[in-house]
Amino acid sequence: MAWQFGRATVAALQVGGYGGAVRCPFCSADDDKVVDSRPADDGAAVRRRRECLVCNRRFTTYERVDELPFTVVKRAGVREPFDPEKVRSGVERAVAGSAIEPAAVDELVAEVEERLRSIGPEVTSEQVGRAVLEGLRRLDPVSYLRFASVYKGFEDLGDFEREVTELQKQTEPKRRQ
Ligand SMILES: [Zn+2]
Image (cartoon, rainbow, N blue to C red; front, side, top):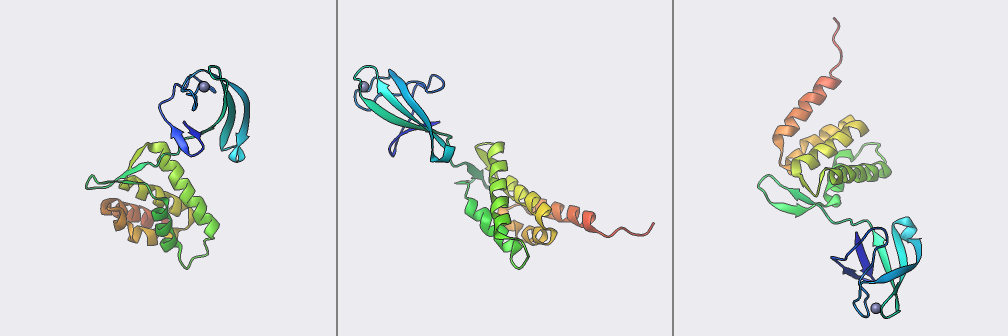
């Protein structure tokens, strides 16, 4: 969780549980009481009005889930922050010319990000590619294959080949017995 005073984020606070004390911006004491708590930012944050028990001045904190960017580790060990726009442009290329709605693309990108965040603060480029492929496979097999064809961009050709082989197996018409 990050506590924000206006734009400044105050880190390393003693957060002793729900609404725990926050260092007073006026006198630096960390002894306060919460005098009011209410949702802010459409429920994405909790706004707390606090009163310092040392200097009696009031200040406001916003508590929100910390959405720190997470990191993608590439094949060569190079790390870069996860960029949903890269996922989006890959998916958009894949679905170009199809009947897939932009809203479905948004949803897929959000889904991929969600899945990757649940894996951890660091994901591999392979995991990114696989998450996109899984989403696309459910959405539209043709786009899936098209994405798979540019999967080299995710630096994992081996997985790409495996995925395509797998899809071919799944979509191959059943032969007469
Ligand atoms: Zn104070």
